[in-house]
Picture 1 (cartoon, rainbow, N blue to C red):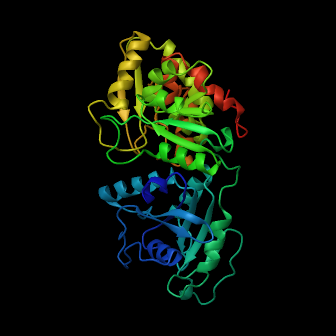
Picture 2: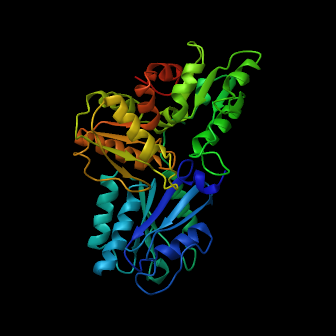
Picture 3: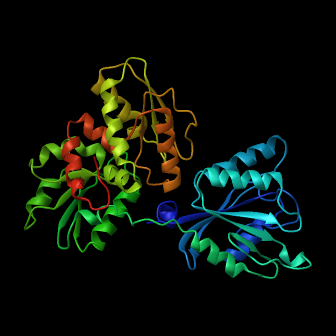
Amino acid sequence: MTDQSFSTLNRLTIAFFGRRNAGKSRLMNAVTAQDVSIVSDVKGTTTDPVKKTMELLPLGPVTVIDTPGIDDEGDLGALRVQKTLRVLQTCDIAVLVVDSTLGFSAADTQLESLLSEKRIPYVIAFTKSDLLDAVPDSHDNCVYVSAASALNVGLLKERISALRPSGSERFFVRDLIHPGDFVVLVIPIDSSAPKGRLILPQQLAIRDILEAGAVPLCCGVDNLLPTISALAKPPALVITDSQAFAAVSAALPAGQPLTSFSILMARMKGFLNQAVRGAFALDSLQDGDTVLVSEGCTHHRQCEDIGTVKLPAWCRSHTKRSLLFEFTSGGGFPDDVSRFALIIHCGACMLNDNEVRRRMELCAAFGTPVTNYGTAIAHMNGILSRSLEPLRFAQTQEVL
């Protein structure tokens, strides 16, 4: 399990924004106590977002991001500004860095408006305060700091920590099982499986099951029935890779609780209700409709890739329609989704909550149905109700 795997899912993302030469990089280095970003007096030294995953007390695990100046100029500068604005879509907490010797500018005001518009909690850090004749008192969400003298760096960290988003803890599967339960995880190892590792939802499931005091058992599709037969009691739950939904459902007794990693991930990310409604939009697709298949990661695509090969084939077979497909991956997602009849999204395990929320709200604003891989596959195999049944007992959210 890599540190990067958890950087977007279990870590808060803290981003530093501001004008060129406002002191963003130097301040981020001071806050992290590491030389993360290159520092110089030359405007535009930071040309791409610089990311660092680390433990930052008192917050714990975080990803910190230094961004190019929002006031960059020229054609190349415009591209850098676009990358900075892209970071706005994903950060959980923002630090608006303002040069205290120059004061607020129009660019700073624009940034503050964007942060408010996107509902991103933020603190304003007035840098280079050691150069002022007198340092004003820090108040509300404003802190006067100096990276050079470490003035109020500790206070800034406290203010950042206070902005941690609140809300009840969401689990992957822990709240659906009990201590001592057996949970069988069906993990196909085929040409589309990543080399030498488990994907993040599978890792999360194993850890969550152990946290619940239950017992995770991993097997392939061919070993599913022998694994269950060897148990002293039936498993409390079977979780399968969505690609094996049909085979696993057919092999299990009708009363055996069954769901998929992808469906559990949609629940954890908070868009399962929307995904269930979107799955039924498959039944009303027409010839010539365009379906967008969107993945949050950028893995190397195999010949039997689920997003670009299997899902389009299954959709055409299910609908009996001549459908068109487009694809996005990683941070790419269109700002206008009105021309799509349906969006089929991955489980979004590599996207943080803000980015997932933004995408789902965008689809809702345009009235574009959106579902995810596991929910769509379950619906097309006629087992969506079965795959949702174990989740009806969740204490954290209503499924339907």
